[in-house]
Length: 175
Image (cartoon, rainbow, N blue to C red; front, side):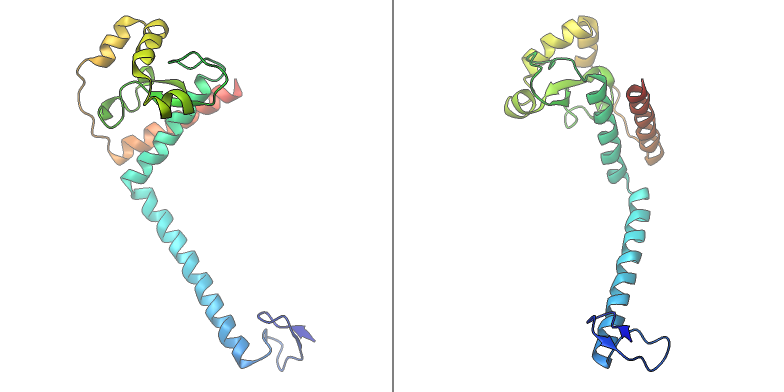
């Protein structure tokens, strides 16, 4: 006696390789195998596509960079309001949308309370600037506010930056 792979009924197989009890279960079993194969091929194709997709890699790089900033500023108060009770996020002084050339500039990004300053107060920029002046100095703040060369990251640049910040994050976490 064997158990059918589809309906889990007990049956007497007519050959040693028989896995299902009836023709209806055989059709269902064949469809299930084909669907499983299609999904696996789709996952492989998606992974291969994502490895070459610039915007996807940029998203992963931003996540790695932000994780590094959160770890670097862990235990420090919010740069804008000084609160220590809220969850910190990586707050950009000059936004990524308006200043993409400062996206991965560490002096531009600091721990900021996620809900109060970053979400509800749109970054709380005036207080952020004051906190930056204390933390990195007025000269660095003025440099951030100045003109910068536009950056056009290639896929290789993006992957290199991602790996750099993953390494830096591991170093911080391991002491």
